[in-house]
Image (cartoon, rainbow, N blue to C red; front, side, top):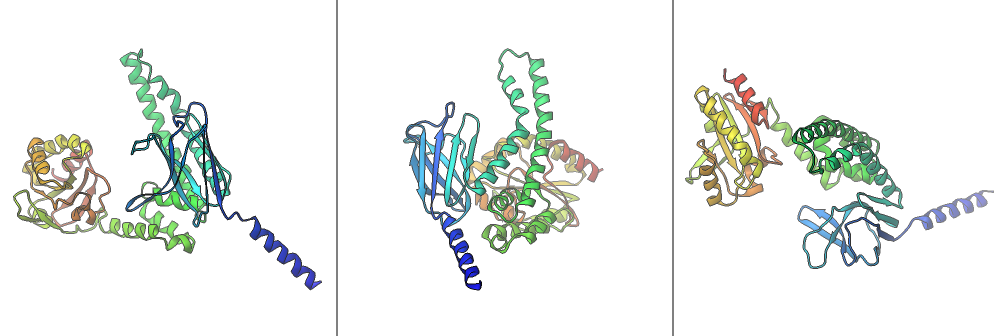
Length: 376
């Protein structure tokens, strides 16, 4: 009986091993209405810290493209579509789970369906729920294309769209938060956490999720990077003491943040760049705040993420910037911006004379109100 049981067990293990696919085949079909054309090049792409890495390519022929090979890893990748002779993709990428098995991709007019393996079915289910949440926006978006709308009708539609969009964003965030928490042990949940952790979760929530990750994910390079970001965000959070740094002024002199903070009731640190459209659009508000509150104890320190001195100094003049400026001309590698984990500009800090960080990323009316509160 023991020998028979062993034989059955061995057969079950062998069958399980044989049932695991050892290669992949991705079959893509381009349906009527899709922007993807025949002769287009489909490229499986992995985004890395050093830029895109191309994994495999296939040509779209007779409304179909096929990839086959062996996947040594299971990860979320993208397929980009390039017109012949063009260096930039012309459609949105198709996300899919790169793994062994038979995978089917249907490129439709306004959506893509990826199925065939357990992970891709899971990803597709998430995408369908997300599409369902945002579906009510589509009729309003289409209505706004009507050139016969009066200004009053257009304004009403825009207001309706914005109100509905806020509700959609809230529902979408809840969908992804729930999905991530329920899928921490698979590649889809893990990747969604890595991609969206800072926009969906507080620092404490991020730490709690990381503590629940399986070892294979918890020790990954991406998670180590998130941990470093969390520690940096904690050090530069509201209520913490500021971290000092020194850079060059446009005249080539050394200037430290601490010099400005010590001399003023409130210091506004403004991370910006001459090439940044939103920064230039926001600058009139900063100029107005300076005029109003300079005499009451405000100083501003501009920290530029430029890498070209001439463009930097020209923008200072063109934008009527009259407060102290500093830069190391390293662009996104700006040491000051890295110390404060600046991920987008414009970005601001308000620092009290005692060195305490009072607020972050205030703009426009919010900045004006906060300065009015601090400098009565």
